Length: 227
Image 1: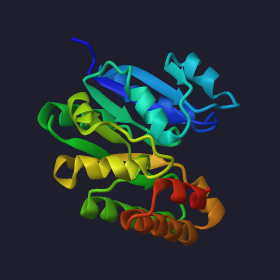
Image 2: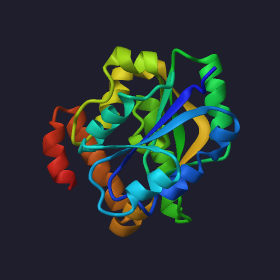
Image 3: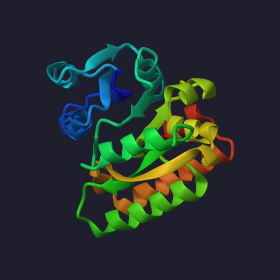
Image 4: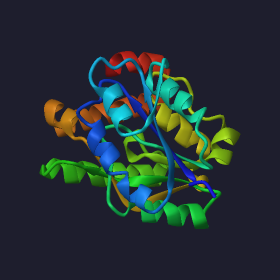
């Protein structure tokens, strides 16, 4: 029986973070979970394509924008389950065990990981708690928490939208809180943007953009503000 999991990673000039992300997938290979890794690139000018090729990942190019890239990566995926993962995220060692158990016992549910920032800053712990609480209360994890979903459910809901921003929130809302659970394994994501911009400043900025989206602002408008 083929391994069940296709892992899809959108990239854009991700040479710095991609090796760590790919290395963290090793437990899934050891357990026989991973059928393929698909890197869907939006026009990188660094070594992203070479890194993907050196590790045996399938490289897809052409689509631009994270939503479009995620959709493009999912289209040729052959696994019965899809795991969408950001290139600057590294999964904790126990991820494969948690994912395998989820696939075996909760095939009707999608799942996200528990968020962890790769930083020793005290503000990182504050923001993790806040983000994980928000994700569970609202059923709205961000993309840096990953998304595990069966191919059947993914196709039923129409997949990722071709949106320049908030594609992660949009698909989570379509899945619905009742069909989404959170795994104990961690998605350990880069803290570079928060360390650059300031933890609270960037956190409140992101919260403001989410509020605007939930109250009707278009992703195209928000994408301009985000950039």
